[in-house]
Image 1 (tube, rainbow, N blue to C red):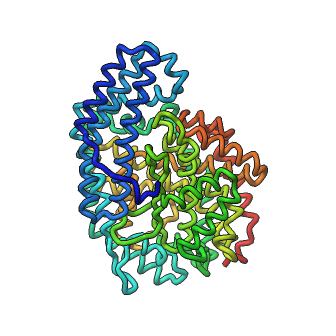
Image 2: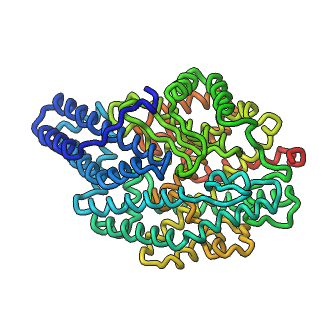
Length: 564
């Protein structure tokens, strides 16, 4: 069914509550076969609610100014915590089942691991707090989407401004950045207020649930069952040791290519004096080339991409009041992924397409699981699918970039490495914030700037007051909307770089293991999935050093002078 033909109805939360509570009550006294039937019935109810929730959320992000979509988003912001409470009662019954051994054989141990973690993240006492947290995150989404920036005689969204940020003309780049951060400066007080309320709200939730800080709760919310904050800290230290020096070298080489003594913040997005690589056509043209690419990549990707096109499951073009960024959602009842993005005519269009297709392809491959927990794995595992797809499609980049293909490949690999220090900066900042929940907005900004100087030592803000005082992080939506969801990208990037290397050495084997990983969905934990895909854990000693060496070797082999 095409996305536009999906019938939407606001769920009746009272009826849903009554039905799930009744089923949970029956579950306790049922035999094993009956418990399996009840689990199936509860999952049908869950799939319907989650489908309507996903559909409403997609519609809202497609047009944040639409009153009907706003009302539906408000409904789910208020009622999602009630739904979470219902699922929590289901998990309680499931985990205490006297037939747990048999149920684990049928559904897998990961469902029970998820249930145990989820039970620790909710109690009826925090229901109202969760509603408020949802409202605040939606307020952030709407605030960022409201950006109407006057530039070049046009009114532009943040995404539509992006091509000017990578202009080969330095004055244009500089002025576009000034215009962008003028918006953030004007909204800074509001952004400070929103984040301050979120930090305090989340801290209150954590303390009501018996945690010392929100950090502990956040790790459980993220279902991080096989690694902890100390392991993440050691990993960040390894990024600092092995990746930061390499990225500093790359930045110095970039300045040299651009003919500059040093990079300013508005220079960082431009890699070549003659301009960055850009796709050679518009959305329709890109989709035509993508169809050819996925037809040739594998029979399964061909089947998948045809399905996405036929059912209109992609919204890719930037427009006024559309939410920023890109994501992949999933419509449980229709076993269908949905891709949301903001094309703007830059190389990012191809990166975001292949990235979100990686998510969607995994969802498509694992859509036949009988429990919704397995449609997607935990976030850091999800990002392996997306980031690896970016690299596994390298042989087809000539379709999009033609004579600029070598530029794109160089930019893409450099960008993957350069992202790692920024990614861990976001993570270290969030650990500090929630360890110090009573810090003032000014203190948070100072701490961000200190962390930037640690991991991004060459960043130069050229007297931009807002950025120099530590405001850069306010544009990173994850910090507001999905706390602690960011180190995941770096962990996955390290895994994706392994797939890149393996595809260079033995493409057939790499694709086979990637397919195995996608088929597994969320049926295993992060480190179990890494092992299943025959990858080295990013936490393992020597992994980062090895990945760095391989990528550095490839970059050193490129004659940059011919790319300008």
